Length: 553
Image 1 (cartoon, rainbow, N blue to C red):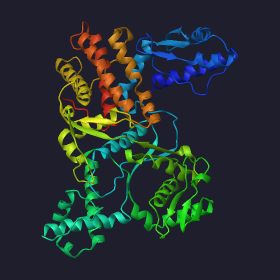
Image 2 (image 1 turned 180 degrees about the vertical axis):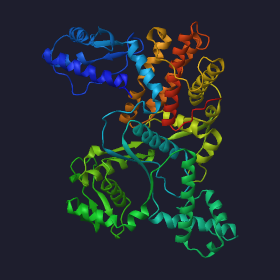
Image 3 (image 1 turned 90 degrees about the vertical axis):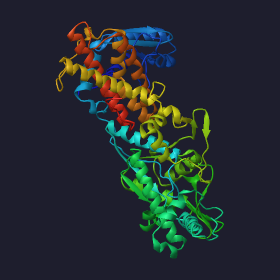
Image 4 (image 1 turned 180 degrees about the horizontal axis):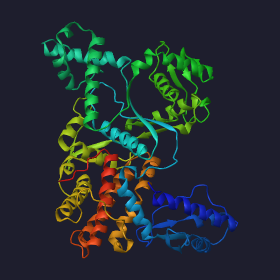
């Protein structure tokens, strides 16, 4: 595939700007990002680089913008370069370049967005990792959306990335869950058997007790716990399959303990001088670790000789690095804010670069039916399982709604809006454009304008000259940059919002510029190619969000 237009512009503009700076005795920052011009500016790109150059030499930013504009306007892809206060250069890209980009999209849509010569670092993204003590809930769905979308987007960019679900199936929670399930079983058989005070209260335990095999009558709490965890974990797998979230590995904590990784990690930390003893306990000296952001030392082994949850977590992350991953990304729920600096300290204590570890903490979801809030409480057993939401509104609406917002923002999820078959519903709004374009192509086949399987000729820029057409051409060109933004921000929200904007640009085009009824067959074919690009980018973008692209609605 030919080099994508914005990626090429990023490269050639940066090269020409550095030549200009060198010849003018100026310096520019190491990074020179290229961004779209604001909506009120009649241009495609707006470069603030003269502002950066002017600071060091105390020269007029606008004068430098005039000089840089002269240096850039001769580039073959640039139609015009204009200086603008206080020190910007606004660029208009040639329509021929945008049309060539459009043809490249339709020739190989599944490679559109791939970054050539990108990083070769191996990344592991861990997400959801809910304790197998109860059904997955809405927050699990938000975490699954974040993680799975990032894996898809980064793979599209050409990265080596794997996904993992960490199963906390070791420690005291097994026996506590077992005691809770055993109590439910005995209650079903007329016994006065209260659930432990700190046990699990959810009604799902009644279902587990009812489905238990006959021999369960003789089980102790540990056996009940293993049975319950296996059953709940099987449901987690089914829920993630229904949610279209994929994991390369389901890594069980019990595997970690069985391998001896936990005591080996403790010895490794001791060897690095990161561990000390105090009050009959073993502590991680996080304050000693170079690059640590934690503000206090942490207990690894309690005075009774049992490890805290922190030690196996460190062992698990060491195992990730030992498996050859260069970059680790953890996606946490809202109750893990305090855990992030602790994990960063652990990474530093392991001797790894702190920047090789990133954590994304997503905020709470508030569920509504219209204006009425739906209460949730996992401990009380009145939470709404994720599977029920999927069954009611579909995984497409769930994933698109979750992807629209930044992870650090609270999310109000309206079940009624998610089911609406109208433009008020964001996912319907985008999917409908894809279906509408598919319908246009079916009609084009019926009329003989574009037989199935036939290729469309390269677009003539003169035939796609109206503002509505150019707006679509320009927007399509930014798709690869949006994927890079999603990777940089570790969130799919730039992509979800981009698809909304692209769909929004299609509507005025469709209203003003007829495709099948165009005044000239060649114009009709040019517009067919344009909407083929819109169709392909919407389909590919939705797929990266784990959302379907229906051809009929």
